[in-house]
Length: 145
Image (cartoon, rainbow, N blue to C red; front, side):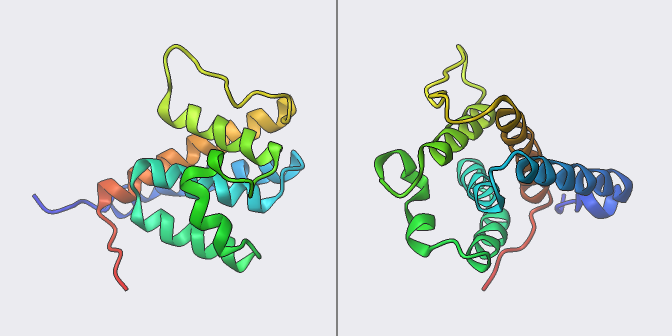
């Protein structure tokens, strides 16, 4: 069976995911984290899920907003570098926890750098990004130069 493009097969469901994505992005922005933290979270989740389509998309977005190539290059090992603020590290750790659903729950990211609003915003962003990765991978979106 050839890949089924989920967005084309059920466009109304796809539109709802787009709307949810916009709300999650707005929540991150309203929480005071800023758009670059959101992009870092999207890239890291896409790394964990192995979604080439979303990696390319969100890396380009982040670089266009002023993110540095050095920070993107070390994002897969963010905890080993000194490139990220405590707040960014907490957001990345939280996003990884939501993506991996570790049991028992590990809260090594929770050093007080994020407010309750920011924890909720990053969690929602991670949930939405995981959904997008699954849509892109399941639909086998092409990723070619």
